[in-house]
Amino acid sequence: MLRIAVPNKGMLSEPAWTMLSEAGYKLRNNPRQLVVQDEDNGIELFYLRPLDIAVYVGSGTIDVGVTGHDMLLNSETQAEEHMELGFGESTFRFAAPQASDIATLQDIEGKRVATSFDKLVHDYLVANGIQAQTIHLDGAVESSVRLGVADLIADVVSTGTTLRNAGLRTFGEPLCHSQAVLIRSPRVRADDERLVKLSRRLNGVLTARRYVLMDYDIPNARLADAVEITPGLESPTISPLHESEWSAVRAMVPKKQVNQLMDQLYEVGARGILVTAIQASRI
Image (tube, rainbow, N blue to C red; front, side):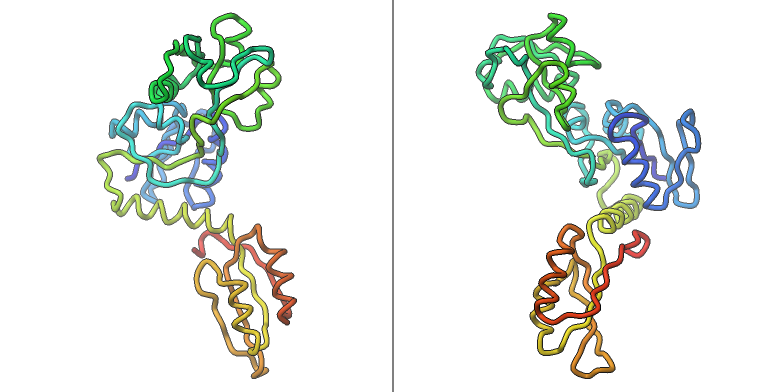
């Protein structure tokens, strides 16, 4: 069985569970359940602390796991990033008090930086020739400056609301951009059949979330124009209609562009435009 680690809490947990559920996998039915065996799909799910997932996967104890790109960078393990999962987008940034004169990377020289991501911050500072003291905290990093433990912090930023409420402001370029990723153990080959099956299912969910099916009829004289408007994720399907001057077209198009594409299709004479959602099981 393929052993998969998923976050048991945090901002990545529920989206990860939802994605696996949409991919057809069995999840736990109560919050105290730490391990779920899904024999029908050949997987075993382990609910672990988000920061620990890369450690388990890197050691080979777990085959693959869902974690953040930033957590992987900070893990000091041999776990390898396998694919991006399209949720949990964030940046990792420095933040200082509103009234502080710390405003550039060079201003961090000689300062104390509180963070839960010691390696990520240390490596970034060293790469930029900055010497500073990194102070490890497991949580509530935003309070460290007010309590006198640090001069500034480095932390994950999604909306920035938590930082503003703590009287902090971000500055400088992000240390990294992050999102949820699927990571694999160095003991698991990228072409392992179990991993390929999982990847296909997850890619199916991503496709179903990002694309819709668009069906429409178009005069044959404008068919080339219409296909240029909706080339689709793959080549569109074109079928003849009873009316010999018309054809039916089905294309997979980006969900975000639907309204724009509909306007363009009507301009070239399309009719009967129908948009439907894609089911992941169809991918």
